[in-house]
Length: 246
Ligand code: 6PG
Image (cartoon, rainbow, N blue to C red; front, side, top):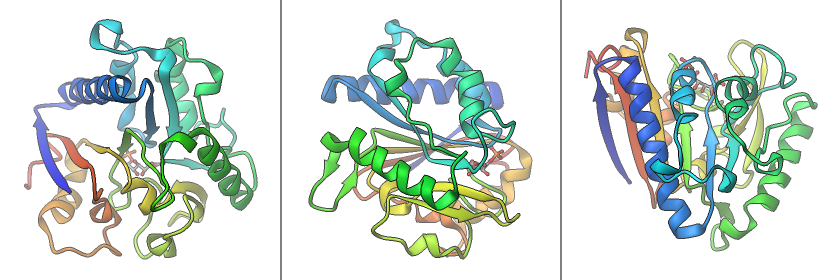
């Protein structure tokens, strides 16, 4: 596992850098596989990056009809709900592109959480069947985009959660610290990715970012530290405010 940190001066440059990394990963996957499989993050940080990614064209190597969108996690709400991670991506990215409907693999947040997790795992097994490493029964996403929570969570893998020691399931239903239900990819799936890209912005993230990147390893307390793809790269794109304590 190789982790690299790229510090950008401000959120706008951070969004541009995320779009560049997205285009680079996409170009490489399209060359190698003829398709690009990417799992999208949630939260608020990614909006600016999604808007920049929407502006990528074939000039940057993007063939949108060959891009397959998945999600790293989702809130258990309907897709039109203001809290929906899918709604964030639809508004800031998908609605601006010509993506075939069958290429958009939304987590069914409107279903009962455990049913939704099973349904999404079935969708993944079907959609990514050609990209499963049979030796370990895990899908290899070309790119997984992640954020970092103030408590060190990533996707919907929260500190101390039993989900952190799940080694068989690809998708789990999880209760967030506020009691709301979420759906999340599990660590084995995240760590099977060819590349993981964290996008972290803002001074309020400076303390947790220092703990995760420079502090003592504590994978249960800091789930983001457990993102260590065995055969992949981890790239941290951070702005100067988030990186101010590194
Ligand atoms: C979610 C995300 C979550 C997010 C972090 C950071 O559904 O909320 O997947 O893991 O990435 O909480 O969120 P912000 O970008 O809003 O700070």
